[in-house]
Amino acid sequence: MRGDMSRTSDGPPPDASAIVTPALPVDLALTFGQIAPIGRDPGLRREATTTWWRATRTPEGPATVRYSGGGYAVAVRAWGPGAEWAVEFAPEAIGATDSLQGFEPGRGLVGELHRRFPGLRIPRTRAVFEALVPSVLAQKVTGAEAGAARRRLMRAWGEPAPAAPGAPSLRVLPEPDAIARRPYHEFHPLGIERRRAKVLSFAAARAPRLEETVEMTAPDAQRRLMAFPGIGPWTAAEVAGVALGDADAVSVGDFHIPNTVAWALRGEPRGDDAAMLEALQPYAGHRGRVIRLIEAAGIRAPRFGPRSPVRSMRSI
Image (cartoon, rainbow, N blue to C red):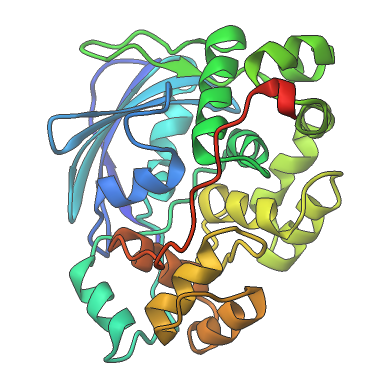
């Protein structure tokens, strides 16, 4: 169900605001932690305990958005050319349109985690290319490498987010055209090798086709995403779970998630994709939600070896 939203009069655009009253409780930390790494992304900042700042690029232009509160009431205010759009779709971005229909957590671990994290919602940012960029950057590298590349890209080619009273320093992801026209030698200093650079450039040049997935069914959206070179099931699921609000998205091919699911649901320290999908089958329609609940609890499979080292670009 769409979260109710009442407008308040805080002046003409580009300053817009609203109060979102979700049908289900919303935990902003759990929601925004799915969109970007908290404290390590140039486009997302937490202030105090209940206020969040996010920079995003909307179809109307960039916006700086402040979200305050949680539970059954979230105050949203936005600045910039995309302010009205950001406020209009704020219920989706914070997961207020998320639905538990068909979700049967049961009495075991999943049920316990569902009760422990009642405010975990699946966001729907509608910003497909914005979600695709970090997902592509995370392909076949460590989280530290992906995060560093994302920060370099946003600082080098992005732009400052629209000014807002009290806002921290945020940056907006570059426009797709700004990425599409870059030659490879400009990606390399950012820690992005040729393969990922080509995937980003191709997708950026056809960004409108990506954004069309917002209005598609989940299967059709997955097919459209995977029709792009370099975008497989893992990347498509990462995008769908953030930009499209897909509570069933499972990142098949992930290095850690199959082990995490096997350990959490079966008590087995290791598992492959097939075992993961089998363990998640009882939660079909909400498999991605179950994974998010497990991750929110900090459950991790035992480690039997060293972590993957952070590599130099010279080794890629």
